[in-house]
Every structure is written in structure tokens, then in C-alpha cells.
Length: 397
Image (cartoon, rainbow, N blue to C red):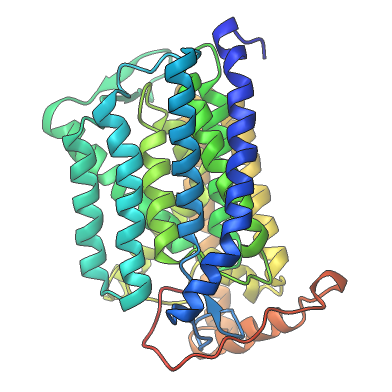
């Protein structure tokens, strides 16, 4: 890929932002874990979760701190050197929506990690976040037309506002719902951030600043993933999923909207969330009620180990990322629809298999425990220490 001079000049910023953010998150995460344990922000094992020991949550604070610090430094240096033009749709108010809004999302998630807020109040907070971003000028003004060519569908007025509201809230919940195995949500978000960042550097988009910010987010996620990958010593918690979902949603739409790209790259969590909600509503259950029917749980039922299930989903997301880089326009939407149908059929088949095999509900716990207990190699000889806590009511995971 040949880059224009202005995009090539921004590459050192992207690489530096990635490495700097990764270093900050890597160093900061153990400290966040220490604080989380002192505050008793801990996920206890139970029949629904796959962790077989108490694990601290709230690790998203390390990610948000690294991202915001690096982003501020990048904006300061860019203001002095004037290397990357700031897009017209990423002026002062939109930057506030991105950075301050990300901090607000993390703080709302932190409240849940501390107090275990009910789902309805979490949703209310998500709607407030999305509404605030829209009020500061973050809106999806168009999407690629599925009829082909370079045509687009304009989203003006209330339609654009409603679509943006749905996009931000949907992205937050997609990341939240997929956060069920060690390193799963952070790894998927890392792949998505890198993909959106790379595409932002393409001449057809010409958004080097957006690309650098995406690389900063990816670096923060990579530094955190070192501690979050199986066997995890800390979970992202609602702090992390709220921040990651909100920030990815905004980075995908600021400047030139990349909704189709984000849909495809994040196809697994988005589609898994959709089918899970449909299944819960079909069985007359609350859409945000907890269960073990997600794709990653079904993969454990097939006999995959914890790491194998995570790495398989990583591979699917990487394949979709490569596909998004190779396709353009309506091709990305058609690919998303294909993945949507295919993953829906897969989840249906796996669900019926589980019902026939008697793996639903209570049987999940023993299978997940067995998968976790046998998923230890030489590199896992030292397991995370048990965290002493008093019993808490059902936490995030």
C-alpha cells in the first residue's frame, strides 16, 4: 500500500502511540489489580462462569488511562508540529466526546464493578453516553448503499441520530456480551482497532489522526492483554467493556464513517449478541439476563479448551479483518450478511446439540470446569493466586 506524504509522515506517530500505550497499560495493570483486590472488586467462580478461582475485575482502568494519556500527548505534539490534519468532524467538541466520553464510560463501568448495578441502570447510562456524544456532534451521516458502486445512503435528522444512538449502545453491549473468556473481548477489540487504524491510513479515507488514535487504543489493549489472557489475573470488567465499546463505536464513525468495516471486523460479537437476545426473547426471558449460551460457551461444550476457544475466535476475527481490507463498499455489507446468516446457523446447531446432549444449564458448569482444569501447559505452571474476598452478589462476568 503506497501512502501519500502526509500519511507516511504520520506513521511514526502511530508506531510510537502503539508502543507507548502498550507500555503504560502493561506497567499499570498490576497496580490496578492490587487496588481492585483491596476494594473487593473480584469475580467469584460459580455455575455460570468459567473462572475456577476469584479474579480481580476493573482492569479497563489501565486501558483507558493508557489510551487517554497517549492521545493527549499525540494531540499536543501534532498541534506543535502540524503533521496530521484534524478532520472537520473531529474538532474540539468531538474530541471531548471521544476522550472525556471514554473516561465517563469507564467511570460508569467502574460503578458497576464496585456496586453491581442492575442491567436497566447500566442501559440508562449507555443511553446517556450516546446522547452526550450525539449532542457534541458525533453522528453517522451516511452508510454505504448495498446496491453496489460508490453510492451511499444519507442519514439525516432524527434517522441519523437514532442510528448513531443504536450504534453506540449496540457496540457497548456487543463487547460486554462477548467478555466471557479470558482475553476474548480485549483481543477482539485489539484486532478491530488495528484494522480501523490501518484503513484510516488508506488514501481513500486519508484520516491519519484517526489512525494514530486507533493504534493508541490497540497498544493499550495489547499491554492489558498480557495480564488478561488465559489464565487471567485480572478481567476488564464493566469498566473495560463500557470504555472499549464506546471508543470503538466513535472511532468507527468520526471522520469518514467506517460502519460497514466495523460491522464486518466485529461481526462475531455483534452477531453473537443479536442471536443471544433473539433466543432470550423467544424463550420469554429478559434480553440482558445472564446465561451460558454464547458462542464461546458452545465451543467449550464441543470439547475445546479455554485457550483453543479464544484462539479460534481470534482467527475468525482476523479472517474478517483481512476480508474487510480486501473488500470495499457494498462488498463489506454483503460479507457481513453472509457471516450473520452463517454464525446464526452455527449457533442454532450448537444449541440443539447441547439440548440433545443434556449440556444446558447445570451441565455447563462441569464442562467449563473440566476445560479450565485441563488447559494448563508448561507456561501455566504458576496459576494466579487465590484472592480472599467476602461473598458478593452476582458480578459482571
